[in-house]
Amino acid sequence: MDLKHLESFIYVADLHSFSKAADKLFVSQPTITAHIQNLEKELDCALLNRLGHTVTLTNAGEIFYRYAKDVVYTLGSAKLEISVSNSNIEGNVSILSSSVPKLFYLPDKISKFADTHPGITFNISGLDSMNVVNNVKNGKCDFGIVGFKFPDPTLLYTNIFSDEICYVIKKDKFPGYSNFDSIDYDDIKDIPLMLREPGSGTFKTFANAVTKSYPDIIKNNYSVFDSNELIINLVKKGYGGSFISSWFTDNKNDILKLRLKGTPIKRSFYLVRHKNKKLSPGAEAFYDFLV
Image: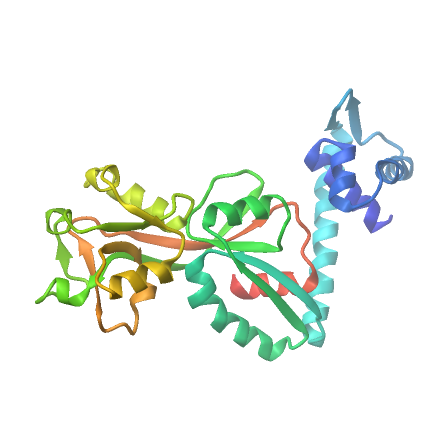
């Protein structure tokens, strides 16, 4: 029984389509059809119902699907473990990430991983969380890292680290305050407000947290920027305040980070991958390392 035949069967079953399975596996539709026919001949039973444009599993297909998934997963795991044990994995890992993990999480992880996997190279690009998810769905990268979960049945999210979103302002604007002190909205409502773009995980987490307690914040006028670094530089120049990740204020003695009273704004960051995307051994190894 050929492993490629099993993979073709699994993709057809998952996608309910011969043509979509062919696209995912980068082969022709007749090739997929031949793989399925070979399996059905070998097992002497029909595995799929072909009803017009819809493909479903037969009773025998349902049984075989479970075993086929186990076989493919087990063989893939064995190959990966052997490659890792030999420390000879090579290749490129393509990751799209929102700004916080790109700047503050990945550098340490890549450095440690490279110590034992010198043959791996990386292609890291930054986008807001919504665009990262869209690109993961479309197969434009191996996996992504985001600060907000956009529910989708084709995606798998795994929590990897946490963060707090704080109100940041130049320290001399609030003399007498210390980091993580609490403030009322009335204390800052007349100060120009800068926020990240609506597609960012920072904005979505912030908006969800303040909608009930401080709905006026996002109803009033505010400036929108797609860069945390730009926001921090404007704050340092004395222009306005912003709600951004506390990671961006570390080691910046001229910036104060404060909390809104009664509204701690916590969030998690997630690895996100497509459930049906088969990763290269190098990408799978780095993904497992992060998990």
